[in-house]
Amino acid sequence: MTEKQNRKLRLHEAIRDAKGKQTKNRFLDIAVTDQGVEILSCAAGGAYLEIHDYASGLVSLDEDAITRDLEDFFPILLEKQDQKYPCPVCGDEKEGLFALISCLNDNHDHTRAQVADVIQPIEETWELEGNVHG
Ligand SMILES: [Zn+2]
Image (tube, rainbow, N blue to C red; front, side, top):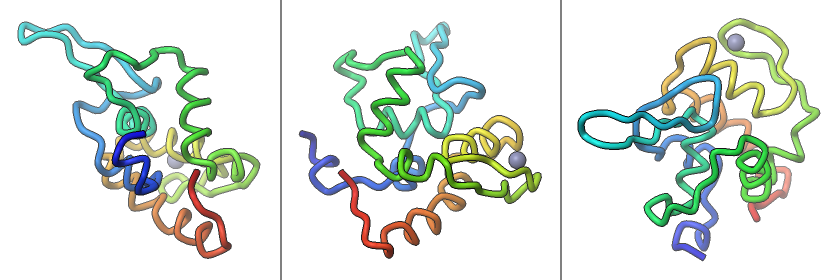
């Protein structure tokens, strides 16, 4: 257990706190530059990195494994997977938070902070319904 896990990191906080260059269409990507190897992440991939110590090398590039890990850590993702959310930019109805995050990240070039701003009220409402993280 890391310190962050003990204080129950919330999804929108993990998205907002994520570091590194942002990418699209997949959770994580690797870029090799003159400076070395860099890990790129989308908004949800950034949240994944926030809950894992990637300096330890214990991260997966497997999309299904990342999805499962995120769902384990942030139960709102599973509980709301059938919930419809209109994308605030294009208005398309998205099923579940992953789809909403992907639309903002991949289709609308939202920064992680902008994605976090969309997720925060959804997550706060969910918490007011009596739910808590992991
Ligand atoms: Zn959209």
